[in-house]
Length: 490
Image (tube, rainbow, N blue to C red; front, side, top):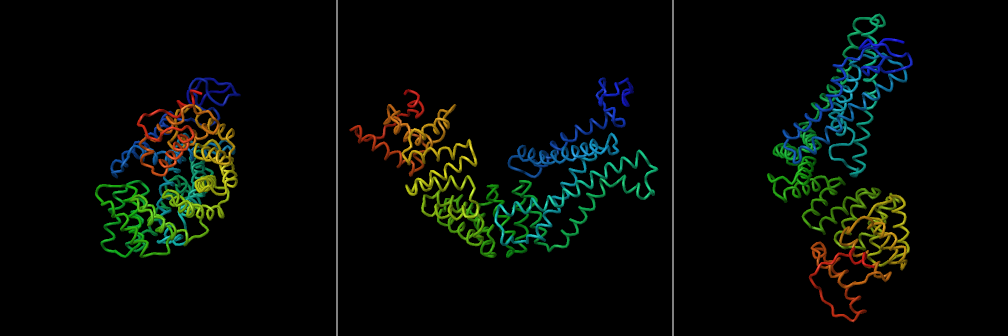
C-alpha cells in the first residue's frame, strides 16, 4: 500500500490512479487547479476565435471561428498528448502544470509558425508564384509549415520536461543561467521564431508587406478586410500583380456588397495581364469568369493555365470540368485524357471522362471500364455509381445496371433529376416501369429539369420514343408523379 500524493488516502501499490480522487499515484502531485486550467483552455480558445471572427467581420463568424478554434485546440491537445506519451514511455520529469505548458507551447508555436509561413512562402515560392499549380501550392505551404513547426514542437515539448527537472531537482542544473533559460524556454522559443518572422517581414518592401497582411486576413476568412488592405496598397502600387490577385480572389470568395460584381474579374484580369506566366492567376480568373457565366472566356483562361503547366493534372481536370459544364463534350474528353496522363488513378477524372464518353456515345466499353475503376478506387459514392450504372445501361447490361441503381436508391425516394432519369431509363429497359409516360412527365415538370436544357431534351426525347412505341400522342402534362413511386408499384 502507498498513499495518494494528492488526497493522502491509502492506495494499492499495483494501481496507477487513486480510487478516491482519481489522481495519478505514479507522478508528483497533480493540482486540481492545474487540471481545471488544462480543461478550460480549449473552451477559452473557442470563445476567443469566435469573438475574433466577429471582430473581423467574417460572413459566418460561428463557423469560421469554430474552424480556426478547432485547429488551435487540435494543436493544444496534440502537443499535450505527445508530451504525455513521452512521459509515459521514458519516465520524464513532470510537474502538475507541465501538460498545460506543453499544450500552450503547441498553440503558441502554431501561431508564430503560421506567421513565419507567409514570409517563407515569399522567399521560397516567390511573390508571383510562377510554375506552381493550385494543388501543388497548397502542398508546398503544408510542407513549409510542417518542416518549421514539427521540429520546434518536439524541442519545446522536451524543454517542458527539462523545466520540470530543473524545478524538481535544482542540483542537476549546472548554472543559474541555464536554470533561468530552462524555466522560460516554453515562451522563449516562440518569441525567437516570432522575432525571426518579424525581421523577415520588415525586410520586405511595402507592397510585399501589404500582400502578407492581405493573405493572412484572407486565410482568416476576413475577406472584406483582405480586399480593403489590398485596395489601399494598390493605390500606391497599381502595377503590383499579386495584390490585384489577392483582391480579386477576396472579392470572388466574399461576394461582399462593398465591391461591385465585376470588380473581381477586373483585378484578376490585371493580375494575369501583368504576370502572364502565373498559372494560378489564370486559374482563378477562369473561376471568376465561370461565376459570371462567361463560359468561353472561362475555358480560355483555364486553357492558358493548363498550357503553362502541362504536367499539372488538376489544371487539366479543371479545364475538363468547364468544358463539361458548358456542354463541349469533345473538349472535355481531351482535357480529361490529358489529366489522366499525370494522375491515372484519380477517381473523379476517371468518372468524368467515362461520363463524357457516354454523353458522346463513344468508346462505350472503355467508358464502362473507367467507371468501374472509379468505383473501385472510391466506393460508395453516388456520383460514380450513377455513372457506372449508366455505362452498364449504354453497354446493354440492363440487369447489372439495375442492381447498381437499386443500391443508390436504397433508403432514398429521389437523388437528383439526372440520376432519377437514369433510373427511369434502366427500369424501362428491364420492363419494370409500369407507367413510363407519367414518369417522364413528372421529370419534365421539375424546375431543375426546366433550367437544364440539355437534360430536358434528353428526357423529352426518351418520352417521345416511349410514346411512339405506345402509339400515344406526345405532350408534356404538368402533373408530378415521382419516379420512385412508379418503381415501387412494380
